Length: 445
Ligand code: PMP
Image 1: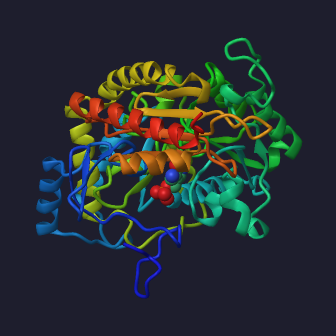
Image 2 (image 1 turned 180 degrees about the vertical axis):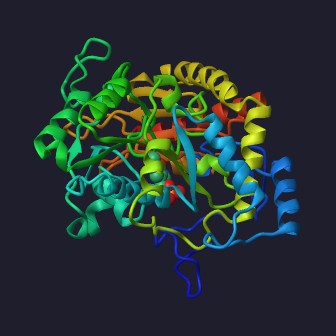
């Protein structure tokens, strides 16, 4: 269906035409032409439980018969209280409180506001800067874009964004310091400290990081020791640490939260995407006891709020998703299937080693980066947009990633529930799509 017709829905690519999705179950989406697509990236790393999961649908149905809307200044609801309890029981450290939103971006905005208000209440109103990192993505609202080290997303709004400092990316496959993995002195972590010192710690409110960089960098795990070093730097300089686990939270990386693996306890944690697994819009900000206490006992109300936040329907979905994730041990499953899939992809890509730059990731968040063409324009080029389009023609949905003008990374991140049979379908269609792209560039001799 074309979106250029009058009365059509506007999607970000104003000239694109999309297949019309009509139904889905497990890891498969079907369109109105009867074609099926293996959802190789869970939409946008969202559909952790797969489509049409009966337990979630039943919970939605039950809740919709009871009550679907409450307003945040008037009522709480049983599913909201239960979900807050479940999440804070699962989360690391003293993240003992949950503030609900409708998206990851809204939760990021809440994190920014809470960090600022926290320091005001602590009598240090000069702490107003948020430090993030190059190559990051934290959402589409202005505060979230201001944090994002993603040039293409910033371009049209740069002039109105607050000028917050950015530290270097922690990406071993393209180390900004030219160092080698495992043998470096973590200059990437030191660069966060340098930014704090440069700005003056008395002006810095928080450091915001994705523990595993998701859709911008393309599934980039932090180097060993990095997250602990950053947590220590934040503690030393009296700066809050915000972990953006919008993609990584709820099991995707093989742990409930990516912070768990590193053993760090952030002051604020942002959740979204997998929290509702795509069944309704939902995000959350988990808040430490210290930040909560300071705001609760402070002089001002925390005024941020969105009309639909914590609506009982979304809360019931979140609760059903958490229940399902616990019952089916999905973080462990993501670790196991992720390791298998990564091994199989490595074997598959070995036949095309000349076009592959890197294969990386954590659990079922896998990034495949392709080489740039030779400087003289020679060699075979596999761009993310080409591979994504070829995959769609072969019945596989992949997600393009990267912050450059040309994206060269695709994400493979199927539902955490993907069956072994569907893993085979994914690999088969991926191989066909990659061969299609390579063949389209090879001049017959
Ligand atoms: N943070 C990260 C790390 C994300 O990847 C995203 C979305 N891709 C967001 C925040 C924003 O989430 P949403 O699109 O739900 O607003």
